[in-house]
Each structure stands twice: as structure tokens, then as C-alpha cells.
Length: 514
Image (tube, helix red, strand yellow):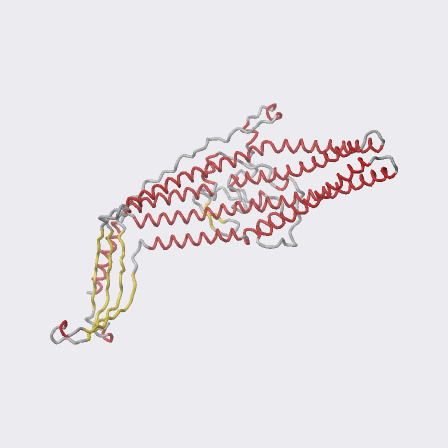
């Protein structure tokens, strides 16, 4: 008899749960991307125009030999410098922002598990007892003054039958928030890889500038000694001596400036990698464009929708807001909950589980809202407002990504020519310094010509180093903007498909696209 009762109880629960097939959430439709179908034409240089290139051809890099999207080019393949690779590897393990992002995933996963559990019945086991004393006026004839009752067995506690999808939509919202946290971690990793690379390049540029300033300081010290000796011999004027001293003092000031910038670049790297710089780092490559892949495949703007984790995360937030509308709508409808108990009951604890003490209870409850002061309607309005906000944030993320890629492509179209011109300027400035020194030593020109030539030469050298640094940073920004930097090595084409999990550099599972 008891097993038959149990079966009926479970049949009722399962039948009620089966009815819960309705959802009041709006059908989700991805908003149209508010960007053009192609990247904007970039500025044409004279040599590009002469060769008949279009603005798009001048800006869009040709895919490297891997033949895969930029987002799937591993950072070990994008950054050739083994010292930089080691620093990135350390940052992915030790960086605190990265650790926080990973724990955010664990937090969102736990919240999703909690919300999902609300869709299933909660069954427990327990024993309870009650003893009470009644006054004589309230007792039945022959009833003892003190009575006791004990119950024990299984209990089904307030299981809500999700007829209108409230719990299911709340669970879907929690799932989308969990997926959003996954995309947020990928965004943190991409930004971290880019930050480490840029800090490393800044350090290498500071080293180059320090070396340049030291050589310049030696050259200007030699010039000052020459002018000073000529001044003491009555050949040079005090004005020429002061002009030479000015150059020397400027170089000394520059030495202090770049020493400070180098120390600050080291401090930034220490924070990013989460520890002091190791003493056994691999040998660094020469500072220049050879430290990166030669070209980055830009693809089409629509690729960003499936490659950029911030865009994917914004869409997850939009889908969560869409599900919350369904939960808010369901609050207008009745809720049905079930409470049941199955076990034994007895007036004596020692006889609780003896034969003939079996009992069961089954208590369905239906509650429907009649008046809530407008709070239910306000709940739906709030959910819709948040969905509209999520739509705007999704579109904003797409527009920002489009701009970042377009800006980086403009840099790719122009930095090469700028660096070529600066190298030529550096060479001509060096020759000018050489000639001006010869003319001064020969008594043809005064020291002002030497001073001007040395200043222009130093400025040309500085511009070349700074522009080279900006070119490296720009290509890194293009790599980031296209969604690159979240995998260690290239993803095979068979795995780089939407919805297929792939392992990343930190050992966490991820999804290539959604």
C-alpha cells in the first residue's frame, strides 16, 4: 500500500512538471549590427595611389601563412620574442585581474546552479515530535492531559510547478550571465596580453633611448671639451661655449627622463606579471617589427560578432534581459506549489516505525495575484527597460570594436611609410652633423650650426624610436581589436567553429564563438 502511495505521489509531481512547458519570454532576435559591411577606406599614400591600390587594399593586411582568423592566431605565434612570451605566460598565471575574472566565472556558475535547482523538487528526510498539555476544559473525555505525536519520513517541500516558465526563464537568465562571465574572462586575458606586450615594448624603447642618450651625451661632452679648449685659446666666443653647454645639459636631462621612464616600465611589468622580473628570462630579439607577425588578417566587420568576447558577452547580457522579461510576465499568473509528506506517525517515539503507523499527506496550493499596487506591471516595465539598455550596450560594443579595428588599420596603412621617411631623415641629419662639425673646426661656420644640426639629429633619432614603438603597439592593438590573444597557439580550423570548446593558455575551457 505504501509503495502504491509513493507511486501516486511521484506520478502527480511528474505530471505537474510535464505541464510546465509554457514560456512568456519574447522570441529572441539578434539586433542588426549598426556598422558598415566593409572597413572604411584608409588614407592613400602617394606610392599606393601610383600603384593603383584602393584605400581598402592599402589598409587590409593579407592573412599570414596560417590562413586562419586573427582571433585564432595564438599569442605565441603572434609575438616572436621568447622573452615576451615568457612574460605573458607568467601574467596569465599570476595576474590578479586574471584571477578575479576566473573566480567571477565560478561565482556565476554557482549562481546558475542555484537558480537551476529551483526547477526541481526538494525532497528531504526528517523526524519531528510534538508534546502538549491541554487544560481539562479542552480535553476529550478520557484524554490524557499531556499528549505526544511523532512523525518521520520523506517530505516534498513547496515544489513550484513552473507552468508559465518563471523559474525556467530565471534559470536561462542566470545561464546567460554565466556565459557572459566566460566572455569577460576572455576579454580580460586579451587585454592582459596586450598590456604586457605594450609594457614590454615601452621598456625596450626606453632601453633604446637610454643607449641613444648615453651616446649623445658622450658626443656632446666631446663637443663641449673642444669648444672649451678653443674658448680658452681665444678662438671661440663665450656664446659658443654656452651653446655647447646647453646641448650637454639637455642630454643630461634626457638621460634622467629616460632612466625614469625605464623604471616605470619595469614597475608596470612587475604588476602585470604578478611578481618580480625573473633573472633567467630568454634572450630578447632586437627591438623592431620582427618581434611580431608581419601581417594580421582583418577579415570582415561581421566577423567581430563571432570573435570579439566583449560583443559576445554583451549579447549574453541581452539574452539574459530577454529571459527576465518572461519571468516578470509570469508573475501575473497563478503559481502552483506542492507540499507532501510520506512516512510514519505515532504517539510514542519508540513505536514510530512499527507496522500500522504509516501515513501520508499531499497539499497542493494555488495562489493568484489580485492586487499588488502596480508592482507587477512595474516589474515588466523594468525588465523591458533593462532589455533596451542591453540592446544599446550591445550595439555600442559593436561600434566601439569597429572603430578600434578601423583606427588600427589606418595605422597599418601609414606607419610603414612614416618609418621609412624617418630612417631617411635620421641618415641625412647624421650627415648634417658631420658636415657642420667639419665646417666649425675649419672656421667656416660658428657653433650655432653645429648646435642646430645636433638637436635635429637627436630629434630625428627620438622620433624614429617613438614611431617604431607606436607601430608595434598599433599592430598589437589590431590583433586585440580582432579578438586575438585568448589562445596560446593557433586553433585548427575543425575546432574554431561556433559553440565548440577549446582550451586556452590558462588551462580553462572556453568557447570559440557563439
